[in-house]
Length: 196
Image (cartoon, rainbow, N blue to C red; front, side):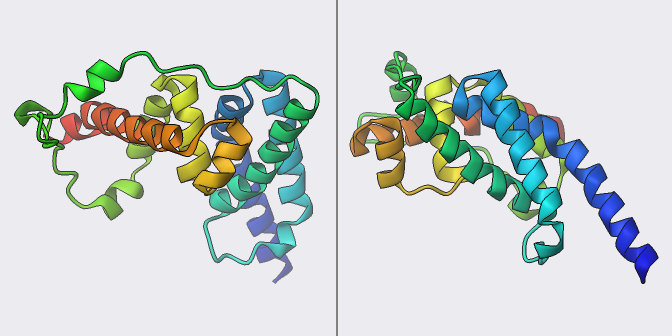
């Protein structure tokens, strides 16, 4: 029994080391400062190691660690605002590129229709999908990636995002829409094109 527990702990340490680059990338995207991102990740990893026994297995281990990081990032964002170091979002300049994907009636342009992703559950289990997703997230402009991450990866409400980022609700929805369109296009190029 003790050996099994020790093996589980070693496996979790290996998994923490493996997920660390994604944690840093995610934290850097939100905090826009490598040193602060490294600090937030270090705090999250220390908390995960300290609270390892409280991991119940209701989610994946990496998901649990990202959940810890989420709170560390929110604390760091609030500290940035308090210290006057917070950077508000810039304006997105390429609305036309997104508008060109749609007809006047709001329907997709024929050449811009989304491709079939097949079985989404199978894609989410693929390591290659997540490599493409990470690459696509990095390719997004900072303001778009930041709002998308807060909403879809960290689970913040629109109201919370607007308060944290200093934007209006309609602007938040536009940014989220742009993020989804760009991610879809990027993932289709990097993921689906390989399967055809």
